[in-house]
Length: 206
Image 1 (spheres, rainbow, N blue to C red):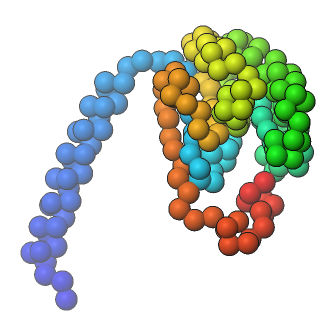
Image 2 (image 1 turned 90 degrees about the vertical axis):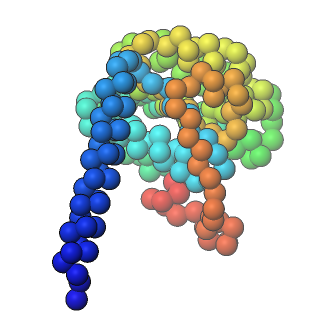
């Protein structure tokens, strides 16, 4: 049987801790008085970078926002995100590089040409204030493989319309890209089903 006195002490201690936390959170909210779009970079070697970006797409859709999605690297295999957005979300402009992974194509010149063509679709979105959110999925590989000029990517992201938010995903990316972003999150791999011989699952992995 619990001790009523101890229970009251625990409740009072909890209340005091929560009041202290609320005061801290309220002060942080009050201090954040800048209103503009944000640049979010999701990197790391773990699973979930693109999934996180598409979670933000769903969030933006809830507010009726206009969204642009451009996927680099991916594209030979249909994904659930693409199927759903193309069929149900006309306010989302969706483009894929369509070459698949570089280890599949094994053709650097063709990959560079495809990257430039895809960037030519993404760049106008980043200059168009009618887009509330732009997702550049797996863009970091274009920098890492030197398919696209890093300086131009960073300049365009930095010069986008004030109210527009952008999400970049992919491993690596480098310090210059991180410096121009407002939020940088790393997804760390602890364990992955693939390493245990389990195949990618429709609806979970693609």
